Image 1 (cartoon, rainbow, N blue to C red):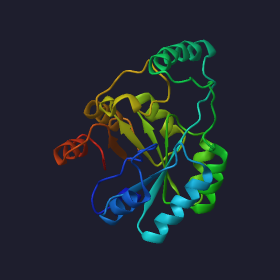
Image 2 (cartoon, rainbow, N blue to C red):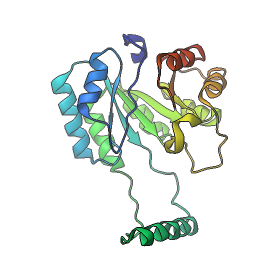
Image 3 (spheres, rainbow, N blue to C red):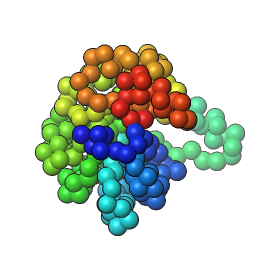
Length: 227
């Protein structure tokens, strides 16, 4: 397991859509942790370039994070209500409101790229990929992780054959990696780690509100192998 090879039990959060850079991922991996590249909001071509850039700078292990497409389309009525909320904000700011649209974040093309690139770790957020996707990546020696926010989600991920779960507490804020849009119990990280550890048979990585060595130490004591 790749977690066993780390010099320090630190995993870089992928940080899609803003602060994540290849240089940051390289720095974490070179320091003995596990750097992560964020493919969310990027194209498959961007993903390939990130991996190329990382490998040009470091021979250390790293991971790539993907957004899992939703299992079903959004409810049109829910979407329409949210658009009206945004419309009021747009009117207040004096800017036009675009038309709602959705895509799968280049899902299939990214899976093809990852199969060819054979990166050490691939993690998924906002859902669990189908078992056949997990098996396809594991067959090329890629370790597969899934972010979970409840014991039930952790069970789904383990049933799909993943190598590890990223256990994310509510301290992560509004951008948590839940499988659904709402309704789940908001578990705190330390409580969730203990609940998942009691039934899981795969390693756990802790995430959510960790900002100090003491926080990391508490997560490790509660059952995580890294944070």
